[in-house]
Image (tube, rainbow, N blue to C red; front, side, top):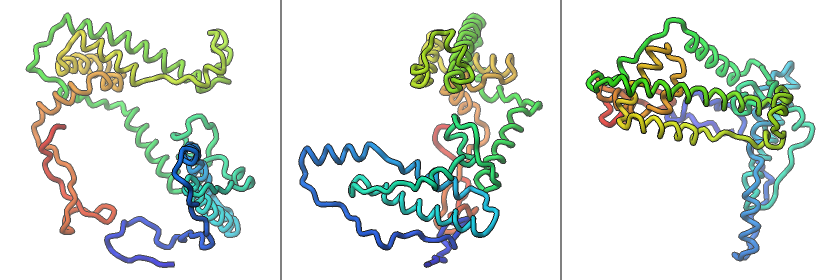
Amino acid sequence: MFVHNNPIFMKGIDRNSYIVLDIEDKITAKEEPYDTKHIINFTKNSLTSRIGEISNCASAYHNKFAKDEETKKKYEDYVCLLSILNGKEIDFVKTGVRWNVPLNIQKGAKPLPYFLKYKYPHQKTHNKSKTKMNEHCWFIEKWERKLRFNKNFVNTSHCMIDNSIPFRQDKYCEVVELFKIYKKDYNENKNFEKMCKNYNKYKDKLEEMDIEKSIVKEFEIDWDNFYKKYKIKFLDIVPNQAELANYLVELVYNKMNGMYYNLMWQIADEGIMTNLRNKRVKPVLVPKETKDGTGVEYLGRYYKFVEYKGCI
């Protein structure tokens, strides 16, 4: 095995890891004529891929707890084999050759590790072994809960409101009324989406609503269009986006103690950013890579803070 000691290589990489290589791989792409038949066949092959499925199996074994060295070695061998299978799958479009994951390996890869719960929210059980990725996921969750449920709410609305814009009470009242409708519509859609994702739990309720299971399985809310529809309605009331941001920030931060701030940002993001830019006192600093090796090292590269001259 070749280990590169060049200092420019990223830190944090396990350089003692095995390099997996199929030395008996003789499969090459067959020379085929460039015609309609073979173009269609190539396109059909490109429409299916099991790369994600194989990668998930490898992630599962890489994050399993091994009770002894024999089991650990078995898991490592499985990961190596899955790496080979993924290589075949990557080349499948041009070679037409793919290998199936052995059934015993496929079954043993369940459940997936805990950190993949956010990728596959429908799965109810997860492997909670104390692996690096799982522990990192738990750390982020703990930090997020602490941030979300912190009782010492810091009101930063003054940074997002432009006091130079006149406050029109009539427009503010219209914005408040529309926000109530917007919030109610959002909650109803979110609740229905939750029921669809947990069909077995809410089966009776969905049947009362005369909604068939086949429809539920295909149902997906287009949130982009949902927010776009309401953004148009809010802008009909207050066309000036900075002014609209003033009213929504006043409502959400000062009247609702920060609740539904995510809904506010979906509607007034441009206006809020404009107000933040106009009220900026200190320069915004961003990291920029240095080529002379000075500054703070991160993953083998060096950075310094410099003033950002563009828009926020």
